[in-house]
Amino acid sequence: MGGVEDNEPPSKRVKASSVDLDRLSNTSSVLAYISPWGGQMARPLPSQGREDIIGSKGVIKKVEFVRIITKALYSLGYERSGAVLEEESGIPLHSSVVNLFQKQVLDGNWDESMITLHKIGVDDENILKSASFLILEQKFFELLENNKVMEALQTLRNEISPLSINKKRVHNLSSCVISPSQRISLGFANVGTNISDLRMRLLDELQKLLPPSIMIPERRLEHLVEQALNVQREACYFHNSVESCLSLYTDHQCGKYQLPSQTTQILQEHHDEVWFLQFSNQGKYLASSSSDKSAIIWEVHENGEFTLKHRLIGHEEPVLMVAWSPDDSRLLTCGLEEVVRLWDVYSGECLYVYEKLGIGVGLISCGWFPDGKRLFCVVTDKTICFYDLDGKEVDSWKGQRMSKTSDVVVSNDGRHFITLCKETAILVLERGTKNEKLIEEEQTITSFSLSKDDNFLLINLINQEIHMWSIKDEPKLVTRYKGHKRCRFVIRSCFGGFEQAFIASGSEDSQVIEEMVVYIWHRGSGDLVEALAGHSGTVNCVSWNPTNPHMLASASDDHTIRIWGLSKVNRKHKQKHSNGIVHQCNGNSK
Image 1 (cartoon, one colour):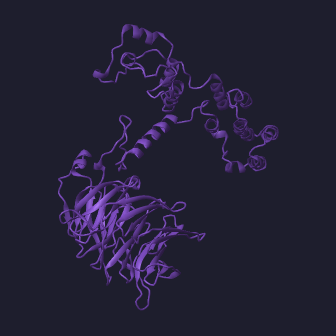
Image 2 (tube, one colour):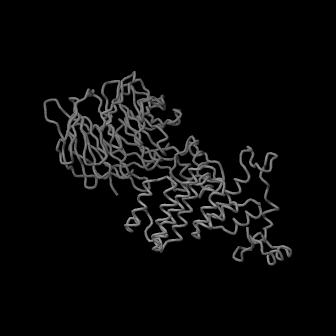
Image 3 (cartoon, rainbow, N blue to C red):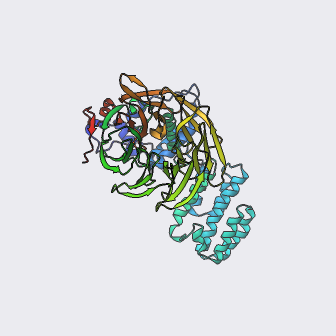
């Protein structure tokens, strides 16, 4: 808003008239020069016929709007621009009384500031007392720092104590007279060397306490803009990006192209049906298990390409599932009614074998506790055993589980244990209080998975529906997802995408001749938004990369794993090189 800068390119310089130059040199006002690009080209905001209201909806008060902009300019360090706006608009940021009050606080004129505090228009007696307490507390500590102990005591007895608030704090203040070290715990150490900073901190605390109409909160404009952007993002149906793609220039709206919809790589190192797969917690690895009695750890490179890191051999039965440790350094693999093996992710070495001895007894599921120091194994005799990393069984729990279904989960906060207690019901047990919640379905449950925030459970049913339940308080059915087909096999679904805004699932059906489909639903609405064809066999399991919302993996009876990413058109839009070729991996590591 100021004059022309010499370092601007010639095309951007605006020649000032002689009248303008005279005004610029002769006036003492900060409003000395207005660029011709301002008054001549700017359009006034619509006001709906009222000068005190602006905006097309008639809800924005002009005074508040201008004051918030002025506050933002000062906060950004544009003090001259802030002063110009105050003078041109005739709307001061603060009243003269508030300006005086701020100056008195920063100058340490405590008695005068107390008088002014009662003149700035605060009607709430509690706010006045709390603000007085903060001011007098600062006065008390500065008197102590200057060795004026008797005056400090008088302030404590005659001014602070009569306020009759925060009595515990008053007691702590009195102890500072006897023990100067107590000041450190109360946040007032080295007052003498940082007095201006402490007074500024006091002003910040007073600003938070006083009504915003008197002192506008710091960064208020930023907060309003962030709120507006968040509302736009939450209302964006297809939003699926962790990048800072929001702009103030246009309203935000993503297209369907934000979803992973194109096969970017086919992993075909397994020699039989691939039953299960799961990305690591940090998204740097993918583990898969197969009826070929092996599990594979795949490394995810920064360019999105997958290479085989380790083939894990040792099971004598098909490998049902895998489970990553919280820090991704170890992996559990569970054989079909066999044993659970613990592997080192970096070396590929088997560290321990967990087994349950007995005729006809085997393990069918496994998982980790959040601390990474304990794990659990589900046994075919309906027992759940708890082990440490050295193989010591530390506890066991016998429940009414159905042995043919293996899903058991410990919540990410470690508070809840979730297991199938009968064919149509899931038990949510709070470990500390032993309180139980029961989720009851009308159809047989085939699998379930837990959301990252521990608040929702995704349940696959035998009737070809997926139900999402809220389990934060009393269990409540929230959304139903339909469209996929499940006839004979266990099909697994998952939460995924940015802030887990989508649901993905495998399927037994085909929308394209000889091509099986991966389904994606919008989590909130339950709408089916994408069907990804490509596999030639049943899609048993899907996993969405937790750190890359544009990466989805699917496991199939066709012996392959497909990696799904953004379409070629969108990759070009993001200015990333792509030749549209599907890369096939035969297990050769780079």
